[in-house]
Length: 444
Image (cartoon, rainbow, N blue to C red; front, side):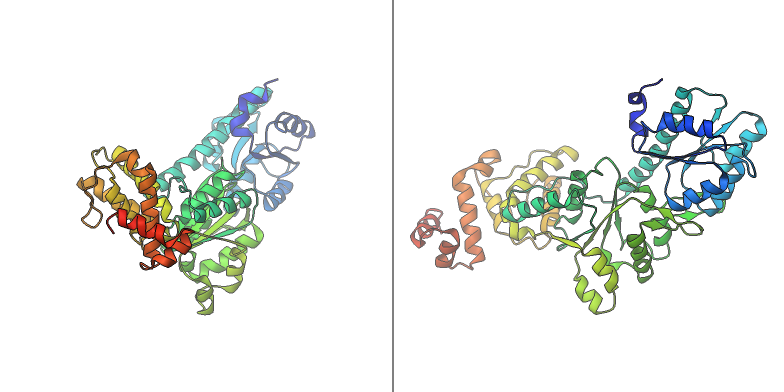
């Protein structure tokens, strides 16, 4: 008997339906597959198999061709019209050309000739699942390459961001929907990806959808899938993300028709592709994001109240960059290194004066504005005039020197207090004289 380790990768998370009218064959396959996969179910007839598909989602179906009432190929062809997402392996004792052509037309993924050994069926299952996951990964990868995907790390040691990170750790093991709020550019998608990586779904897909970027007449097919003219199902993003996490951004701009459909998906964890008769089971965690006031959108009648309450179970508010200003220096240094590598253009350095100006700037565009500034500056070989500095201290010394860190912090707090040194001293927990002495030493 083949060991489970040889097929562990593609098989371990799979759900499989075995269809055969012979109990001995069903039990043989169940015995081989059950220790290696997530779930195995059996059906003794085409009618029972149809009922099983109505009740649950399967990654793979193994079906015998010769059965009473309806052949395996006839059943697969019928299921294509209803909406059939699983890949199929056909078991047959007759490998004639006519059967092979019919199987290709029906979309069968592989053949296994009876009688067969355990390693033959395991090999066919592993190959079929490998191809299935490769198609899914290629589709999602192409989509990510065409999008401005929010990859990167959730960086920063500020108190505001540390609180967000601690909340994400608490939410990671739960299936509960999460709503990320915050101004544009604060890193809502980064936080959502961070939550996904912390969860037990980390090895499954993370699919990000910008609700404002898909045309209203295409959004149902894009999300839910569509049965095309040849009765083949083109899976939507919900099915491609199955087992993983779906992140819906800009939910306030979701068309009303989609709001109603999404509410049903959230309540039932089922999706009906456009043109399909069957609803397909899902296993998804839903994350949402908006930079708009959803409560106001509900009050204005632009967003369904029932959907709002369904997605707003737990809210994670991303702080603006001005509220985590101590992270600006770390982020600027990281972006400078990243763009020097990706653009192949080095020579630009952060000096103490530039870092001080960055720390004192309000950053209305948040982290995205900082990142764009660094990218432009690397390309042009210099920072813009408002951030340019002639400081002599650069590199790690400019970033880590305690006196410079202190200077940036005190002057930033003074800016927050509109120059009121007594109030700044109170916030800093030091005497007014200490603030006056420090500012004087910096020529202020």
